[in-house]
Image (cartoon, rainbow, N blue to C red; front, side, top):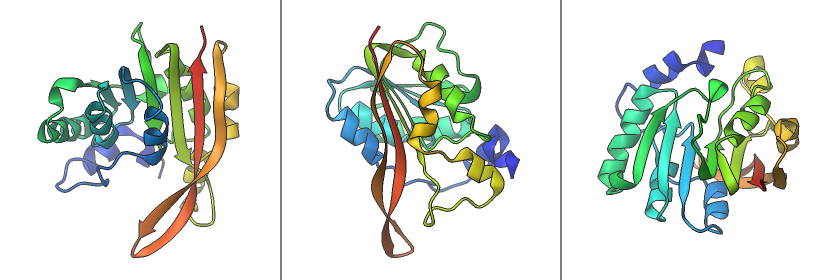
Length: 205
């Protein structure tokens, strides 16, 4: 099951037909970005591009990043279909080895990125390098729960609550939020709530 977290598994997943995700923007992103003036944004782990497209539609200039070339190709097609291709670009990179290389954005966001063995703590520090002064970093993940129980030990070690990420917060950032937030989902006709782990940081210097 460890291969689930590696690029080949996602290249295969995105190689077929049909969509794997709803295409709708994630609610925690909508909640934060709706409070901000549009600027430049980086969505890491963008998959098929739902969040990228929504941000572009709100006036942001967006870069979608993912380690799957097939995922990025899907996202580019979806952006073209949505009429926002001129406002988006794409970047193939692995969040676990991410390097900003001097690029900075007003908003850096990632949803449901779950590197194994607690690796998200280190990823927070890497992604923070891409946040411009005064900008925000939004990290959202699955919290372990009875409803969203991990399938394997590897999945369990990849899940986190927001407080688990605080050791990865570098100097020069203030913690705007580190909390669990409920999200309503519908699966197989049943409606229920699960918790999102939400970390919001603002760069102060």
